[in-house]
Image (cartoon, rainbow, N blue to C red):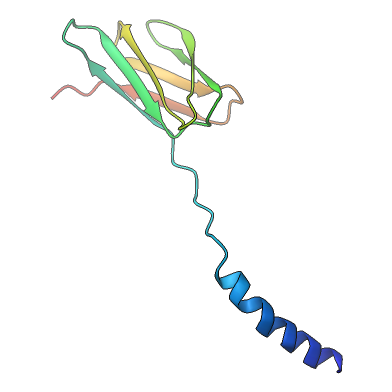
Amino acid sequence: MNRTRRLAALALIMAPALAAAPAVAAPAAAKCNVEVDSAGKYHVWGQGFPADTTVTYSGSTKGSVPIDTTGRFDLGGLSGGKYVIKTADGKTTVTCTAVHH
């Protein structure tokens, strides 16, 4: 077989395998929310962050919180309604602001 025929045969064999390959999902965009609880304290939570890492938060209070295996974090009992969340690698920064309805 010449080179052209071999490539054509290979293409026919590989095409179904390539078409059936699983799609790679794009990572969810990191976002966060600030809510006021019944005691008047602020509750900050987020999703779409790198799993099994930590993020730092700063606002009226500073600290860090672990991200779970699903890319979420949750912290409560805070004062102030605006926080900046940063990943440990510095690649993601999100500003969270309380929305009052």
